[in-house]
Length: 247
Image (cartoon, rainbow, N blue to C red):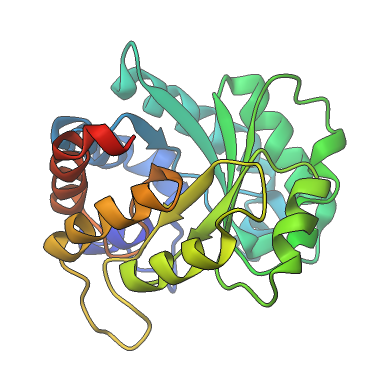
């Protein structure tokens, strides 16, 4: 969502994607609509950095409740019946566990179907969220890197219901899936990026080509991270429909 809003004019040095839930809600809704039209089954809320600690750098931390609630409401309205909404929690408050818990509670109260911790670098990010009284709300965790295979066990022990990775290339997703296969009894998540930190583009075609291999390795939740667009969603949708026998 962040990179797509930047493409619509967001100045990241002076603004934050989360604020657009209030200042430019139609642009956020249109992004959701494009994903639904491309075949998405799940929408992710525009709340990656919407915790009070991160928003406080603009002296707007007190708006975190309204921002998160608005994000869930918009995603839910655009998702429509039969689709899911995940509440995004990014790593921006890594030194403030209380901000994570507060944001998670707001998202749950607003009606998300699950919590998605994106781009985290260690299993410890999950610690504390398992005790917030989330009831049946599943916790999905996407790691930015995998420092050791022990991370997978730590994630499960810490309360993750789905584990995986995001913000890496489709080929790296496959490498991690091969390493994780058979180690844990949780569904796997893969959200590759449309562009890597070196600026190399990962095309919609590369996303589609990765889908069959990921399915064979047990990945069951597939999406796109930074730099991906509705074109990537459409390519993955087509590949998933073509490979239904692998689900």
